Length: 212
Image (cartoon, rainbow, N blue to C red; front, side):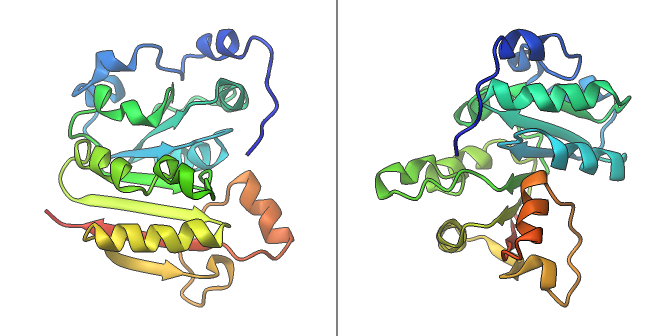
């Protein structure tokens, strides 16, 4: 997905108290930063931060960390957060391949919300549900593994179901049309999702886990 590049984006996000500049310094110490021992939920590809912000507002009993490689996207996220006084959310500007440099076994849940689908076969290893990423997640989950994914991309969803299943994940919930699912699955929409909802596009959803 193409995004507009914002001039001096890194300088702008680095001025935010919500951006962690040296996340490696907090490996195995994230609870010290949050000053509590509440569960830590991690979102990969947090984009403009609307989902994570609303999660942090709704669930103050949990801690939230958003990882985003695109600094221009994080400009919007940091601007929104500066108008809040939330104590349970932080952002990191980095490549998700480096997660093990930043986290020990500290993460309770990973959210993958409308991730880049990387539809071409040659780009398969870039998908957040590729086996290479699942192996990274193994090293940062506190104990049991728990992944929640939402996407409008049918191909990525089918791929993720197969990849997670082959990796011995079990599915708590699978929905082929989240907004019209009769089970009323709890959901906080992203900005993209709100637009997709208006367009009546189906949103695919899965909640997968593996108990160690």
